[in-house]
Length: 136
Image (cartoon, rainbow, N blue to C red; front, side):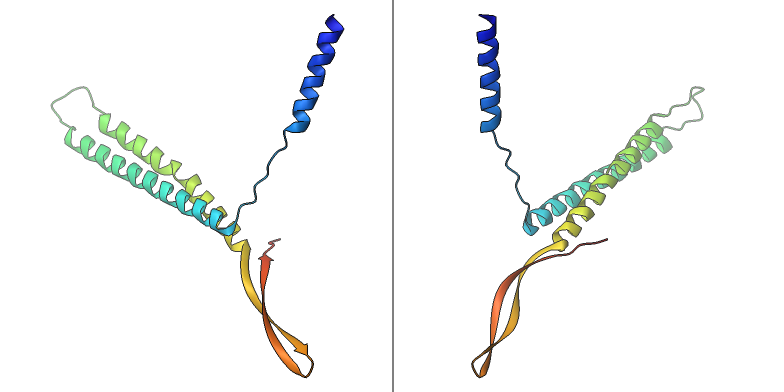
């Protein structure tokens, strides 16, 4: 009985694994440009937010720095540091934007004209061409 259950489970596992094929989608130039634009917008928003939070923290620190208190208050400094960290976090998004833009430039689909001799004339023919730029 145990062998029958074990064999049936193994059969179902192998059947389902053969039936599920991975679909690998090829990204086009427009996909890479869209990803680049989205990463650039995200990075700009994060950078702007970080700088605004840092400026706000600096203003809070300047305003709350009273000489009458014996206990120093660093709330503004902590907020400014958090804003600086947020601004630094935007760096990978700028890098990803550049990487995707370079990939979009490397893959291009355009038309190239060819001169083809036909009988006694030369005919120009436009054909679609896929070009791939390879960097070493």
